[in-house]
Amino acid sequence: MEPNDRPSRATEGFFGRRHGKAIRPQQAAALERGLRAYRIDLTAEAPADLGTLFKAQVSAFQLEIGFGGGEHLLHRATEAPATGFIGVEPFVNGMAKMMAALDKRPLANLRVYDDDATRLLDWLPPASLDGIDLLYPDPWPKKKHWKRRFVGPVNLDRFARVLKVGGRFRFASDIDSYVNWTLLACRAQGGFAWQASEAADWHQPYAGWPGTRYEAKALREGRRPAYLTFIRT
Image (tube, rainbow, N blue to C red):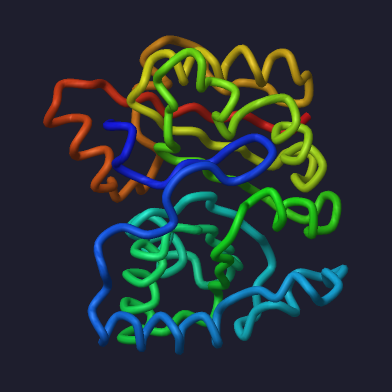
């Protein structure tokens, strides 16, 4: 993955681009309508029951941080209508693509947030999520920038706070140094158990995995993705 392929996330704030190429007027209109309908307002107090955020009757809650073009999030939300999904994407072009898709096919079990994911994590109630997905985040490949990676002690503490015991943190990347970094960081945090019994386990895509455009690019360029799953203990 090239450093500028997607928006960047950081441990204590947002690093990187919020805009790419100019969006078309039709996309801009869909973005405006969609954010009015789907955006979570963090100025309001977080509800004790996250189910009140959704128009659908939902009984489980999943968060995807940095959903890019939304391929994975849309697939999961469509396949699991009884689960409430929250997607975070500060990159305007990605959010515009998602809102254009929802304009054509609305989903009552989906909400979004278009700013720094750490703000949403701090807003959510403790032990409120059943799962968190962080898929192909910006790897910040230069060692001097590793501190900007989203996975780190502070954000893993945030994950541990909002995940229910038994909840899943899933991390996918095609960058070996970031995979190793995440394994070491989760072990050091102490609240996550890696779910893998043999090496082949973490090279197998998740069940029902639809793929993403970032994954397709990695495969074309000869990089082997890793799919890590951690359980909140």
